[in-house]
Image 1 (tube, one colour):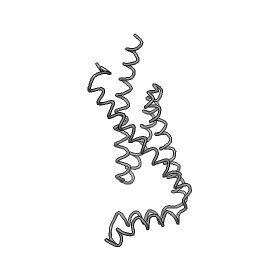
Image 2 (tube, one colour):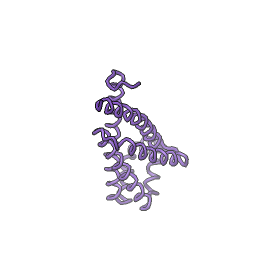
Image 3 (cartoon, rainbow, N blue to C red):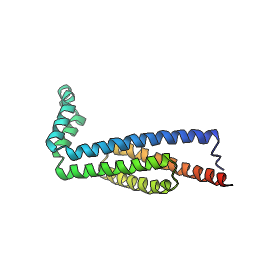
Image 4 (cartoon, rainbow, N blue to C red):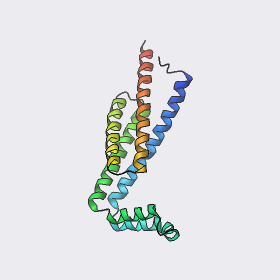
Length: 166
């Protein structure tokens, strides 16, 4: 039986709070990135990529990561940019709202977060199936970890509220 006041549960809750902080920061970065993609045109994106990779390319003209980033910036079309901006904005907004609601311990937020995180995880697995990305893998692992913690916290919160009603 889960004792919401046990030391173990308090430690798990600290981890939960920390992962919510990470998800909140990630959501803010995604929203900022989505806005920047909407307002930045392809020439500016290429210029930013060239600026960010210039030192690495001078040091090693065959650097695979720097050359890959440059290639992406060169082929990143308006449709790709619009989709990426839309995805970043929606993912960031949904995650941000979930984080706020979970921090406030809104009971309705837990099932909604299961559905939203589950949908994002499924889509991220879909992306990984067609092209591996360390970033997508890292976000997916974080989302899976948060999903497990959300499930645990949901059980603890329900037990705590049931005990308070007695």
